[in-house]
Image (tube, rainbow, N blue to C red; front, side, top):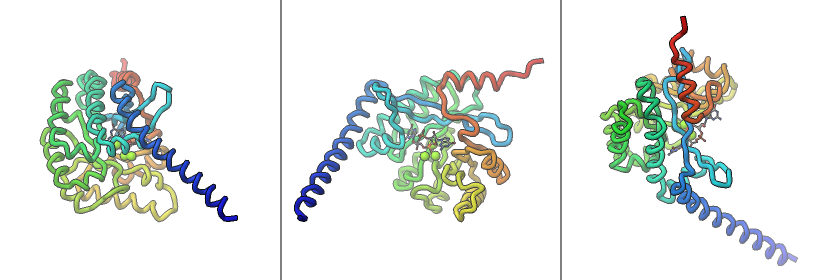
Length: 281
Ligand code: C2E
Ligand code: MG
Ligand code: MG
Ligand code: MG
């Protein structure tokens, strides 16, 4: 009587495997289509000065909406792009989108910045720093208006990354380490790379106010960033309690739904114009 069970299991397994293979093949093909047919666009999430509440810049976050209307999350398609050697094209589109979207805004507010997420592979591309220099030149803004975010995966290519970071910073760009504490962290790499800013991942921000052991970790991350002379941006701030804790512990900047969700450039420009309007009377 084991035979029917074995056959049944084999059929189910075969089905699951073919479905997985089909999906894996489908995403890179759809992404190639998306790159060609301009299905990718950027939204911008404000970075807030936690003391004054002022918006000091934005992070550009990539969105993919298929012609069917369906959205695909960057947490899904960025790793696929990295695996199928499409990331160079994705990053090129991100830079081109920033050039088109943000030039006017950055010329109007030269103290404002746009931060771009680069993949670990982008830091191995010897042309990346020149590409960003060219972007700033084309937009007619100072390179300091364009920030760069790198995840800890860049530590896998330590030597190439060190060179790229050095050149980017020499050009005037600010470089942050993103999602700190969630990946291939190595304290020795962190001291070797000359960085400007550390982004505290939202998983640590989420522990603020909780009794869990992990809630102590964020205090150590903050102390370490301070001792390395790094600025800090806390990600994923959703409650006033989190904001108060971060401010009290000397974290200068934050992002999160408590302040603002990612938005289109038109809305951002409108909001900024309203905020920066000189007080009447
Ligand atoms: P990330 O760079 O760490 O971006 C922060 C993520 O947290 C964003 O998700 C943002 O929408 C989300 N977020 C912001 N505030 C809150 C909050 O208060 N609560 C919660 N729960 N989430 C919040 P998103 O846009 O889905 O992006 C996910 C990741 O995809 C990014 O993480 C980044 O690693 C990657 N990514 C996005 N755009 C690009 C891009 O242009 N290039 C590359 N290489 N990666 C990108
Ligand atoms: Mg980021
Ligand atoms: Mg992050
Ligand atoms: Mg992330």
